[in-house]
Length: 547
Image (cartoon, rainbow, N blue to C red; front, side):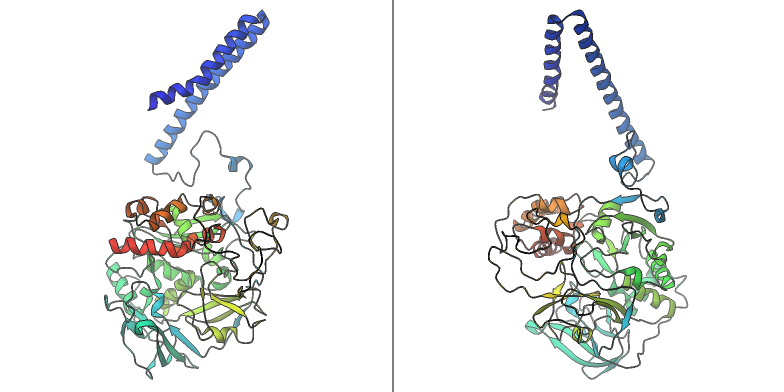
């Protein structure tokens, strides 16, 4: 196959030489000289190109042999375009390499909250929700009963398959209700909170010199283990498996997302204590992703972390996703295991390591154009949503979402936030019919389609509703997914392999690297209106069941 290809590549050169020969025969002596000079110049260019190509390959090989990171540094004779004409990295990166992610799309929505002021709020009850933990039995082994008094950090239930993992109360108070759903599955364990909070005190005297086994036991007994997430599959980690690396993203690029820089103010000690503890649980490194996309540097609490591997990222959403950062730092496979953890979970673990007390405080951003006063509030994990929104909504026909508009879940008035939720978004319910809404640009809306002249007002924030302006359609090839996902993954082919139950192809196309939040932006731009997050989760569950 290679020989015919070489022959095909040589055809243009042979044709050029034949034409040049004819021109040389028919022209004057001066014209012949010009043609000869052109041929000599062409030969020199081809020789130089061949030498540079060989040199490039040799440089790459030597860089890999020496252990240099070729994903962060350009080991090339010729500088790339961004080095010549790109905007220089901010000074606060201190010369560190920056991952410039060219793909992505920021969805600008109205209802942004001011992160400079965090309001206290009174919440009457909190809940720990077994449905938030994948692989946990629908009916876990309950360790408390209705009417029982509990302290913050006291175990409420445990997994029947592994009773070492404890799921603990976020607050102290009375167990008011054990709420059940379909097939009597437990959906919420509701705690009526005390005015004065009390917490279980753990012994931390030997924690600084603890071995990995001792640190694992401490995490399991204290409830800290349930704050960890294992990839692939996004499940509670297996205590017997040592992760290759642990990843933390310090910024969120989703629509109206929380600003973690405001959350960690004055919490440097907690962050450092948490990463010190996590570093004992992995055989590799604790990776911290930092944003290089703003004029101001990230919080000093993030930049000042020690004993971690820092990476800088610049780009549109989903640049803040930990999965995207892993892809550009240390990609995972179906046979490798890594952990991830959120910023506010880090603070809980850090406080636990410093004081021995489990304090599940949460800063929650309440945003969206249907919120009268978008704001940041301070509460605890699992807060009752109606208490957080009380008297702060504009209309009465809204969609309340725990999370952002891309990955969040619809919630009712009596619902509770999940353990990892730190955002509530409220937008209009879009259950009205808009004639030709998919065709006529009647009003501004977030879109990557040139049908809407959004490029004319790049900083405009849109008022949106839940209307999808169309229904599920034929699954056609458009190239839209690849234009917004900054990962070397063919999303459409992957989705079709999941739908066809082709396990080998799913694994080969990189399903292990993805989580629902990574393909959410693809779902947003999808012309076919395909539920990509749902399809991906079905594929991940199938892969996990196959072992």
